[in-house]
Every structure is written in structure tokens, then in C-alpha cells.
Length: 209
Ligand code: ADP
Ligand code: ZN
Image (cartoon, rainbow, N blue to C red; front, top):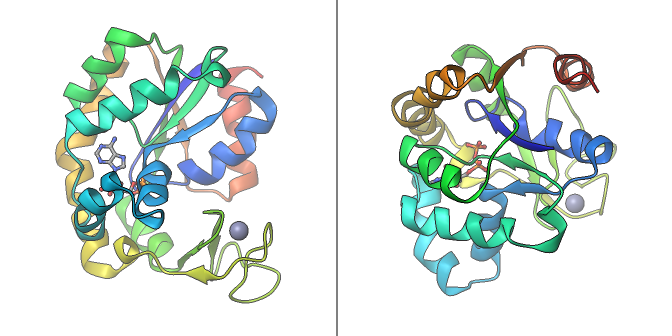
């Protein structure tokens, strides 16, 4: 199954994707994780995009589309994938349609206040990218990752100004994709306000899996 996860930052796309890949046996393709990996590796791409990510703005469409296109050409993605954080603009969606036909677009529905609360307490594993939250998803040992023991940190783009910028960018550039995919008959809405387990349950229901 070829899926897109659409929704504002902090809607829980990454968390749900982690659960959904186990069920669907498809790779989780997160452009945010790819960019952060490049930054951590200090690759040429990483050096180029670091200040963009820190500010909460978007990387240019050309760079992003090329990355995703290459990633989806990988053998492991031939049977399907979960795209998390891509497409984020109409031009990205149009480019994607040129090289892959998605089956469904899952729209994570959540109000701004909830987003602000969530991102403010978010902690990320330095080592494997796993996500935790100081209120809603505490790690077993404070400050350290449950999966790999890595140190947890606050992403620069989870700081207050960057969060406001990401929400603004989402409203202007990404939210139009909701109407775009609804018109194509691909959109499924999932209420993203409850906790992760309930969201996963609702996700299974709307997809019929
Ligand atoms: P979020 O937690 O905001 O959903 P992601 O981890 O998906 O964030 O992405 C983090 C950052 O990576 C974005 O703020 C943006 O700078 C960049 N990025 C990720 N995906 C894209 C994309 N499809 N187009 C442009 N920039 C992107
Ligand atoms: Zn970890």
C-alpha cells in the first residue's frame, strides 16, 4: 500500500508511522528524518539544509523531490511505502504523481493549540530519531531513548519561534493539499487528538486493516 501521511507538525505522523510500518510491512520514508540524517552526517546536502531546518522553513522543491524519487526507487519501496512529511507543497504533489501513484492520503486532523502543546514538550533521540514527550510519552529513563539508549534532545526546530514558523508554513503551503487530495477522492481523515494507541486504532479502521 502506498500512503501519504498529511498533517501539521506535531500531529503524530512520525509516531503513527512507526506503528503502521509493522502492520503494513512497508518502509517509512520521512523527508524530515532524511534531512536530519544528512545534517548529522555533515554531508553536502546536510550543510546546505541545516539553517533552513533550524528556521522552520521548507527546503526547496527540487532538492526534496529528487531525494524522494531516489528513495522510492529503492527495492524495499516497490511494494509500498508510507510518505511522512512529503509532499508538503502542491508542486511536490504534482511531481510525485509523475513517478508514483499513491493509494491513500491520511489526513491527521488536529487543532493548533494541541500542536503547540505537543511540540513544546517533544524530545528526540540523537541516535535513532525516536520521539518522546515530557507529558504524553515519557521515556522509561529520563533523558534517554527506550529503543537504543541514545541521548534525548530538543530539536532546534521544536523551539518556540521555529514552531510558530512551521505552523504558518503548514497553513500556507501544505494545508492546500487537503483539498487537492480530497478532490481526487484519496483523502481519509483521522482524528489526531487522542493518544497514539487510539489514533493507530482509528487509522486501522479507516483503512480497513
Ligand atoms: P515536522 O515535525 O514539522 O512534521 P519534519 O520532520 O517532517 O517536521 O521536517 C522537518 C523539516 O525538514 C521541515 O521543517 C523542513 O524544513 C524540512 N522538510 C521536511 N520535509 C520537507 C518537504 N517535503 N519539503 C520541504 N522541506 C521539508
Ligand atoms: Zn534511540
